[in-house]
Image (cartoon, rainbow, N blue to C red; front, top):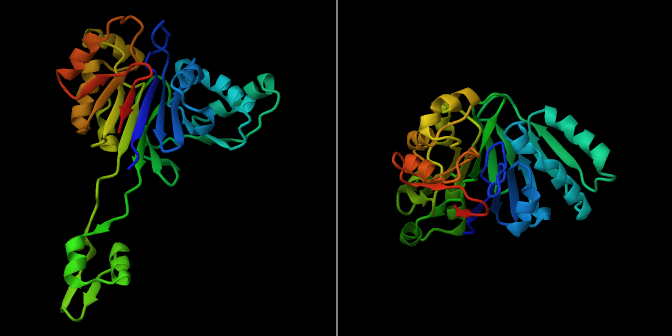
Length: 305
């Protein structure tokens, strides 16, 4: 089983600091890389993390604020200069498509690859992407402009048949295949019927990662991410600045932890910190008080799923 690796490329909010870049993360699954948001300096952070640009399969943008999108245009130019020919899928709100076309016309002499732009739907929970490894669905968020989070879910693994059942009934390959395909198998010699639900099992549950930024505390989003292995949830402020969080459409560290507990996730990573915080320990302590399985997002940290 190959692990999933989530690489934090940017953990800051609107204003970059000396130690924190704006929002960007790379989810590495096998040889494919899924880029989530693309703030300024994303391609520099990719270089520091030794992540090959040519392996980026798709880019997912939560919303059209500068700190989540401005790195995309330089990335496209660099991808073209590296000789990429494979199409690049971009999932974002519709107005970004015209902006990308304009930037290419102004600054990129010749784009060597096709951009496959997919406008995000309005309805939450929609499947927007699927390949041989994962599917991606949207999560409802509440910010100052239209914003969606993303859930990356591994496809269910093929079931296995219990070895003791194979040995007991001396099952043929054909009978095993039928059971794995969901069919019942009648064994005349044993006067019994084998049902898939009784003889099959999963080696492990499918993995899942959810990404939620920028957003107010949104309890209605919990069913969309329930039980995920890892949740990234913004924690722009500490709870003493709750009025400011509400005014700007953001969450506090306490609210991120409350959401993680409500959604029964396994682990929580908080980030999107306001530039006012030089010391992040108050944010971490606030979240861990409610949800102990919380860690801080820090540049170039790797989280294994």
